[in-house]
Length: 221
Image (cartoon, rainbow, N blue to C red; front, side):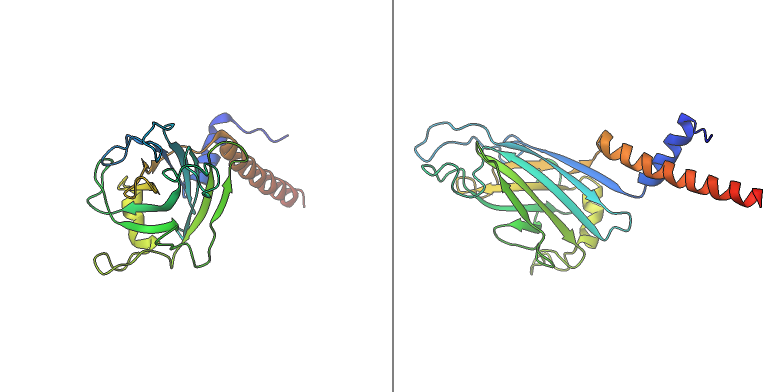
């Protein structure tokens, strides 16, 4: 019987996941620069908007996927038909050498509205909540994509990865009321969910079992 110590399992897990990168962001009104206080079109307070986002960069750094779930922002313009203030207009990732959690930076990749850079191919999937206001948006930043402009040329995933990995990037959701951004979250390294770690561990353990059985068969010949 093959016995795997806990130390070996941890080592296998680290080796399997070490080259991959997980990141996360918590989006709030207070994280915006300047902070935002959402109201309805008529000036009454509306529920604070917020959200979370998770990111994954593959081991070869050829793409970055993300999934963001946002609350109290109308993602399709139909969830609060009597109020346009909370309508989602644009959503981007911002990054740059001068970006900090409290400093603004340029758009380097747009995935909703304008600019739309998730086009090679277009991987954006939008799933509005079946009840309530908000939804889930996911996409994939491929190597050729990026929001190159005259003032910020040569923007690709490769050129922005150093900033993203160094905490100099944020994800931003812009609404009709707050064209400069209603909720924002700094992108930082994160520990993957336990379920993801377990899948990696099972895969690593399977490789060990296969290799061990191969060696045993070879020794018996």
